[in-house]
Length: 151
Ligand SMILES: [Zn+2]
Ligand SMILES: [Zn+2]
Image (cartoon, rainbow, N blue to C red; front, side, top):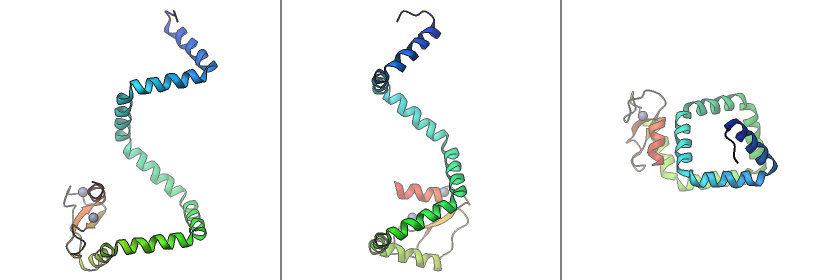
């Protein structure tokens, strides 16, 4: 494509790929394979920078669709009642100790003023290092707690 003018070249490419969508797919695929690492790290960077935004948007969405969500849940529950109940029963069976520990801790323990890990005072929760010791808890904020259980 002997175009000195980049504007013309772009125009040409646009028309060419408009006529040959499979070529474009091929091109995109190759481009992706060659630049995979860069693309991935850029996506990671992007999602890191926009995490708060995304969360806020999800919250907003949830808030504005609350009734709809509830209705959907109810509908789902009505249709899959046995499955849902079975799922809960199984969960309780498997997590007996954990659930007992959570109940006891809720009753018998108080949260500290701050997260033990980061010092936050927001959304504090009880963490059990050992579920067989229900009243031994560590105060953690929601995000530290989440990270801890995920790792
Ligand atoms: Zn924390
Ligand atoms: Zn925990």
